[in-house]
Length: 362
View 1: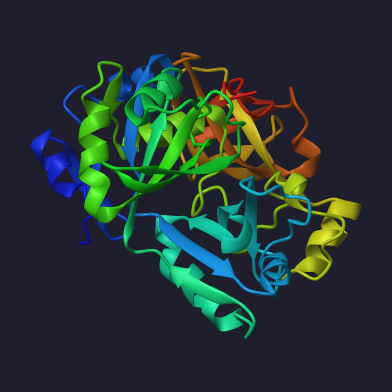
View 2: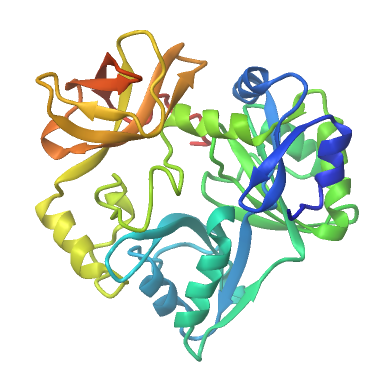
């Protein structure tokens, strides 16, 4: 298995390791998943996300290129602004979800999912025009610092103010100990926080400085998953795949009415105008139990109407929650449905997403 630059740090901390997207990654540390989850909600958690891909594009045709790859428009994205979107295929399905950052004269930077990294890069290369240059940044690590204390901690470590950074914005910072950093105010937990791209040769310095802070604990991938589920954020390979359109996935807000040339535009624009036959929903269980990915969903009259794609327990809500796809006629909030778990019919109800109000920077 591949290893990130922080691999020995995880071992030294006694992390329970496991394979994820071909990497040996920390699943949780000695305090356990629940404690890690709550620590992120209450203080600040540090995630190694260096298994994700960082790819940059620049050149005269860069805007046309990324608007071909995704259904979004970037014409009004300010310099150092970040935008969430999805890569689509010719059939309008989702290849991956990702974030683009406008780097000004340096072009656009994309952060892509670890499990999709190889296929995404192959897709980019297949469609790369002559007037666009692509670079894969294997020379950089990526850390995520998430939680209500994240701004205070990172500002102290870097000795720079960060309170002026808006949500979904980025900035470059040069530091003697940590090298050239790219700091982005965003994340996957619903909390305020940052992702920090750091040169590999300086990455351990940044890790050590952050974990030395009393408010910071290292967090594994298990709590990263429970945190995103608690927010109702989709995970590629579970809630999103290459047959699912952004409209079905409840991501119509990433689709620009001005972008009719992206891959799969015919299906995407038609579904945005006319609707879809199935939709991603959030649900809460009314009966005791946990419903997980693959759980079949039924109407109260016994018709099969869909399937769950993510599910688990919300520590903050003290309830079982999940996401899935159901026929559109059963997707309205407050619709009661049945989750069939190991032969038991558990009552559930469709609820709005996200399950919790995001605490990201306003």
